Length: 600
Image 1 (tube, rainbow, N blue to C red):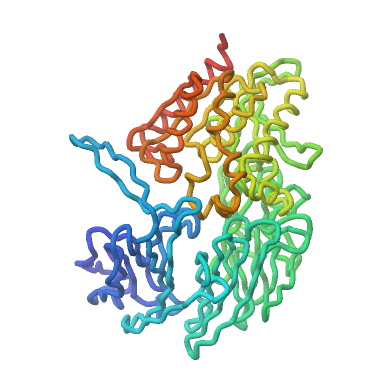
Image 2: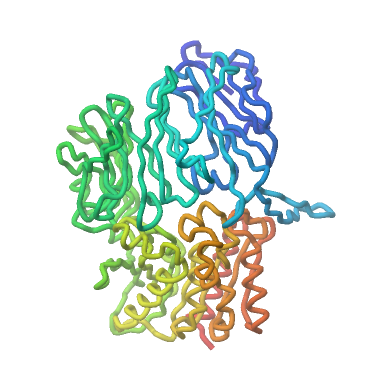
């Protein structure tokens, strides 16, 4: 249903298809574009007839204006792949070609007599990846179509389009990555003459960016731009790029997380600069220089972000809490004053936030009435994926809170080598060697925790989901004798089974790094599970980390005659949503009670 404010009337009928895969208003006027049945349609007015822009869309083969699985998950983090120019004159869109991409198939059991077979194009490590083309059409005459071809330096091989930015109505900027993701090129294209400009960036120690290269923010000349990239010391900082030369705007042994807003007078960004503590977040304006949030609610807010109004006259400060815990807080401020409205509450849990001699951070949740003279069971809550950060100053109220407050279990997380926002040296330590340092560092951390004197060394468990399930399984399979039990939810078993964009960013292709692929499997460690209790959980319809991964772990454990517990969730994906979510946490709680609270 569409409502026109100045007429105060509803537009009926809207005449949209029953299934719309994506919908996007133009920035001005009443134009909009939508995707249906993998093709793009444009309406120049809400009452106008839709004009079909593309005609070749076909499920699992050609997708227009929407990403396929791997682009949605690993590149755009969005279900749209079309972009309006600033006045709505042009529409850029991506055509994704999956005709040569292998499909993963899994059963959907439903309630019919026979299960259905679901097929999803999914490029696994080393296999054929999605081919993409970027087009720009004139919204008033969609037959006028221009392809924005990638530069020769990336077009000669497999490549990834990672961002599209309209600079003006006649100028578009595109970021292209090579398949290795250690080289990115910014391409600026003018439609009024076809002039190209290019700016390049290469990482010599790993991949470019934290995950994907961050968006570009263009200066008033509409040619130069601001971008977050690694400086000469390996820390992510804002650089001003003009004529291919990058000049640092910020510097120091801290990192810019992202740019929030650029105006003619200022550039606003979020960083972890404050007090040299990388697990905090604050909003900055270096033009002053000034931290806008560091001194606001210091006793409550240590992890903040900012969202700006169109002209940057106002920003919304989102406070995610602090330690000791307080719940999130939202307030609105002007650049000169503040007028907050909020509500708060408290709870009685305590946290410790310290750092090891290696300057790597851990976080510990202690039970109520904690006594150092007492011995407590310990649960390691792990993720440990590349550039992840489990330890931070955000308020948390989760399963760990329940376990600590109700069952007296200490919950700890540790960010080891491979974690993010502390420089490339730490983050790139696991480049081309997943399953090594990030696993070893969890084991080292456990030994440090035991040395504190209040951990019962005979009652230690570890658990994680997705990459955390992988690290959990690898740590249990290391055979250290430290862990009594562990829980892996939707874990990776072998990196060959995971998607190419994610896996190759950190490991390269299997043919180029075969030893690391072979040495990083959970299945190869199956015999070391003989002396631990293991709970393996997975959804049968997981289109991200496929059920194949858990099936291979299960097969390897059976081959080694290892007793273990398992639970599969029929027709559930990677999130185990709906009734399965509660069931999962109840199951895991009972498992930990047997392992840590009522051991035989």
